[in-house]
Length: 151
Image (cartoon, rainbow, N blue to C red; front, side, top):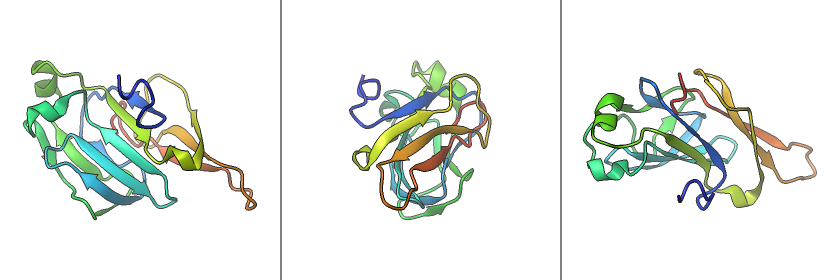
């Protein structure tokens, strides 16, 4: 409900099929929960993203998650943030749907989705639309960079 209502910011959710959760942007890890279930990133362009791996997965207390980064780490698009045993998370009764939201959305007009369906590593998930300014720059591309919708 928290994500669906947009309370944490606009974004999209993906349903991972396999593999690690990877960084969708070049930037810095602002927050990396020791349990491996959530990450806050700041892209090189200043967009801040929250990636929440699965729903209510904090209750797993890190079981089935192997974090690969910590707060302060620099990341490149496609770098693993956490390895996840998706089958075990699902078998434990948790949804694997993973929201990706713009957590500093107040500085932007919103997002433009690139559509629904299957995405692949390197596909754009959404654009973050900047508020109009004198420079004429109005978009920052946030890449999905996740195979079968892993972010």
